[in-house]
Image (tube, rainbow, N blue to C red; front, side):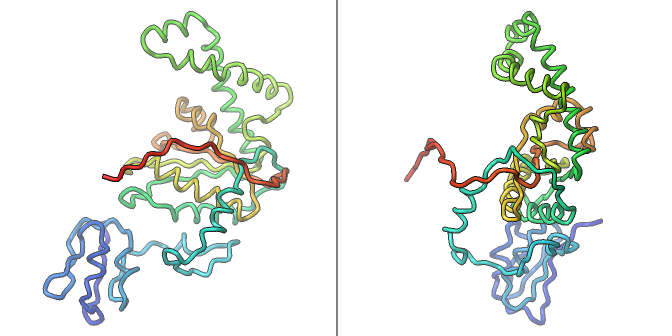
Amino acid sequence: MGEQLPQIDPQTCSGCGLCATACPSGVLTLIDGRIQVQESGCIGCGHCGSVCPTGAATAPAGDGWAEHYDVIESRGAVLAPGEFPAGPLVDLLRSRRSCRCFTEKPVSGAMLEDLLRAAVTAPSGTNSQAWTFTALTSRAAVLGLGQAVAGFFARLNKLAANTLLRRAYTFIGRPELENYYREHFASVAAALVDWERDRTDRLFHGATAVVIVGSRPGGSCPAEDALLATGNMLLTAHCLGLGTCLIGYAVEAMRHDRRVKEAAGVPSGEAVHAVVALGWPDVTFLRPTSRRRPLVRYKTA
């Protein structure tokens, strides 16, 4: 399929040039009061169609999947900058918490689908939208991934327990194994004991669904794109009454062991950037948490 380009209706185009001004890739130019369309370079951002006051500019269209929700009531409104009050938004941001206590109630497929629709409203580098989402929709599927992750860390702990091996890697400038041993070995070992004894789930905390956020090759900044989409998903999940938790251990396992990716159903050619545990929370947070003051710099010239 070739590159799609914006279409300009000369009968309704007023020649205002707003679409050319908004075009980030220079595909549209205003020449002698008429909009000219270049033959290549469109990234499909849709700015031209969004700013055209007469509707003369038509952006390359998708299939509409991301515009129609099943469980979320969306008016389809376009909120201009400053139109949505910042106070409720900040309340939402501060209210979202990582949940590590879930009930056994499953998350519906329609709700998961709407979360993914909300996720892809995030920005992406050069509008590549190269993100991927792999949804584990049952507790059994989540436990299957948990078993694969446990196997990876059991093998890693066996290596890390070897003092000579840790020292050898550190000697050649590879201190990762020593750092892992110092910071994670003991807690992982304890979690593995609990898992093998009675399947106590200290990884996904009883979540009934998991979404793995990855990327296909070709994006200009795929990790950033995936994490921005993940942030959208976390906030939308909170609005729907769901709890979420980012599972970094699962990300690391999939990055280092193709067997874990295979267990999750993620193709080998995709990178994994985030793993989100999802479910109905079995805990109620009554007040927001505090945050440490970050290092902030201001430069005026």
